[in-house]
Length: 139
Image 1 (cartoon, rainbow, N blue to C red):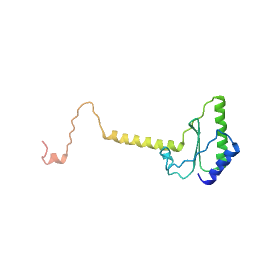
Image 2: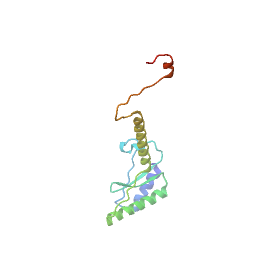
Image 3: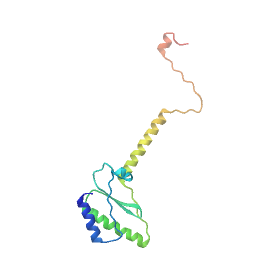
Image 4: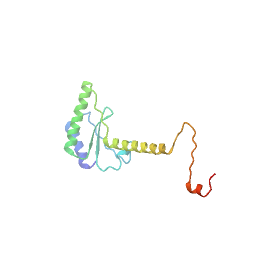
């Protein structure tokens, strides 16, 4: 992320001074697991709790980012204290990519199915050309 966002994250970490709160930055171009985030020019903030994706924020909206950090930290504390479950989310951008891949695979299989005709019994196919019959070229 840009320097302003990094300094905001440091500020939030210092203000909250919570040992449960950890920040990490990652360059999608150099990490294979983040391949689907490549080519997108907006920052994406992924929030994990217990190894599960619990929130996603796109863009560098500082007030929204700060509010979401505080909210997700409070939710995680509640889960750990009361033993409740986390609400796991899926990243819509990744879902869009997955849907596109599934549609492409489906279209390819439909094209392959349309080329292949299976028959349970053998058939004889005859093509009659009227001009060939008229010229006496047919038996």
